[in-house]
Length: 80
Image (cartoon, rainbow, N blue to C red; front, side, top):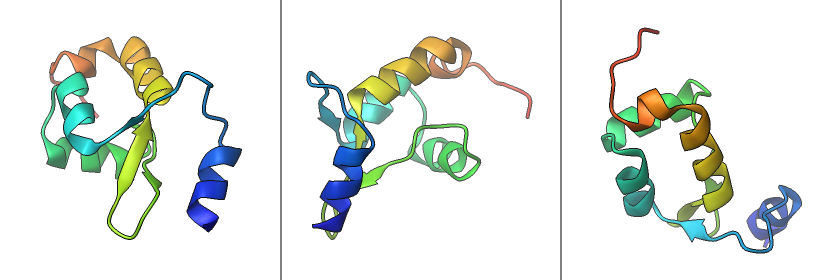
């Protein structure tokens, strides 16, 4: 499947896990709409489509984003 090839090409780490949207929302601590808005604005790691109705994020990308954006992950308001 082409999507799986693209995901493999993006370089997941050997210990990387795929996170579904519920896990990502729990880790980041924001609403689904905020997450989607940040994605569209390029302010959050892109999702990877691995099936017709299945999307995931790489755990390493989410952890890196959290480390670099603690104020957002803590739910603080940030001026655009």
